[in-house]
Image (cartoon, rainbow, N blue to C red):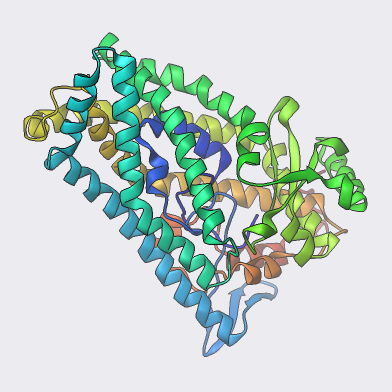
Amino acid sequence: MEGNGRKMAGLRTGRLRWCLRTALVLVLASSAFCVGPRLASADQGSASTPAGTSATVKAETKASTSAYQLPPERYEKAVSLARKEYTLYFVAVAWGILVLVALLQTGVVARLRNVAENASSKRVIQALIFVPALMILLALLHLPISMYGHRLSLQYQLSIQRWGSWFWDWTKGELLSLGLGYVVALLLVSVIRWKPRTWWLYFWYAMVPLSLFLFFISPWFLDPMFNRFTPLQRKHPELVQAIGELTQRAGVPIPPERMFLMEASAKTSAINAYVTGVGASKRVVVWDTTIQKTNPDEVLAVVGHELGHYVLGHTWKGFLFFTVGSLGGLYVAYRALQWVLARWGKTWGVRGQEDWAALAVLLLIFHVLEFAGTPIGNGFSRMQEHAADVYGLEVTHGILPNSFQKLGDIDLADPNPSKFITFWLYSHPPLGERLAFAHNYDPWSKGDPPKYVK
């Protein structure tokens, strides 16, 4: 529940979505096309609109007016940052497509395939040569855009992560991609050769349990690779008690030993908290920046929103949504692959769909499909985020103040996203809308029952 909701495709943006997409297309190193700073976090949402020459954003409501305010200088910075981020996102998408087309058209992909096949007749060895070579090449070609994204975060003081640390995180992300990409690529090509007409279905069968497995182990193995976690009880026992009471009220009690503090301040100035995991991996995580920059009530407001996602089943609903969407995407990719190979296969030196070089073609197709599906996924996300807002307001009713103002101010929220930008890139409703809703949502005074927390 951070203050900004712009679309950002990154290795760790949206834990569930990343795990599912990774399992389905990480053969293809989707992380090689990460945009950078914050264009699309699955946990963000923002916006505001200027009123005259002031930096006050006003949302009209039936009874009163809520306002998201920025000082004039900060307002101008938010406008400037938003324009650069939106441009960066679309440039990154176009660059990803152009790079793949260029590598195929110039025969680079075919030559990498030839090197792999000449080195060994065993498919396991061929994949070990071809897949990492292609993924590393793509990652390096996209590195300047990723670096510019981080530079923006530093320039606008949204990140404090030094370049050495940033490059180390980038390297770890690529190594993860290489390992999983190798396994998935080998599986995909094997399935294509086994079931040339229905490989898209059988590959999907294999990817669903892998996605669930990745999501389950993420809190234990993947998250600690990029951030340090310590027991929340160690430094903030009073907060542990308050969060425990909140989880009890929500009907999903989480014991103190599953509450953690993430040391985000080493890398970012943003604030956040989240509830993640399933079964034994279920836990509450609070960023240390959240505790540093907000009061205890505002921390609980953030946690209440995240509990809403958990209690309302957004985890499994989101998994189901993206799983079904991935099945459709794989079928479209299968049909598109046949058409593309029939038209350009000989020119690119791709012998057929079972060829290692066809993985680059599939990467290109998935890249286009992911871009086209972005507004669909974000529309679904905005609905879930609104429901979590409602739940958060209800579960904290009578205890907490509204915290959206501070969240947006810290994150330099976009002052006025267009309807198109909101439709295409925003994973949350614009902050102005969220503020207006929170300001006016009061079923208790009207004698109406709350929607979720009775």
